[in-house]
Length: 193
Image 1 (cartoon, one colour):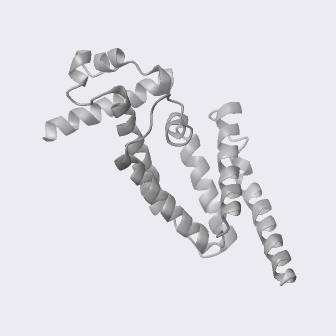
Image 2 (cartoon, one colour; image 1 turned 60 degrees about the vertical axis):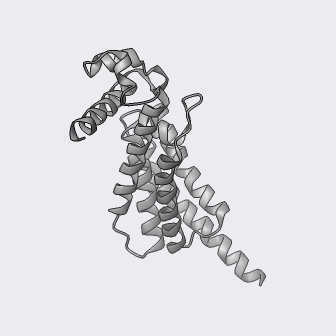
């Protein structure tokens, strides 16, 4: 059992390596098998299909996100904590663009994560939504806007300055602008009552 788990882990690690070099759509089972020292048909004794390999990669990425999010040290100050959430998301995503693409962009035609793998993301999203509520983000439109800021900064950084910080360094300023907008909306809503 331990040997099988070690082989599965080796295959998944090799798949990440190949995808980082060739892109997610460029994953070749022949190359993957060669990388781990086996014949291509032998992969099927560990994974039923290429999508099953993507699913294992997805689950691993979702677990990494959840584990790191659980380590965040929140302060109780809404603006500080919003900055922390945005910074965490953008840094997590930009440090591994291929993982970001698999988790958040659906770049592999026909791939959908399994219910088990997707459940990891759902639990993580629920934890994030609780964090949002703690900092005053309880309006779904505002949650959507806040997450769009994070993904926008991430996409810009990955697309236009890979390995740099041109857009990631704008995260705190973007969060401050968003927070100001949120406060203005609350004030307007309060004066209408």
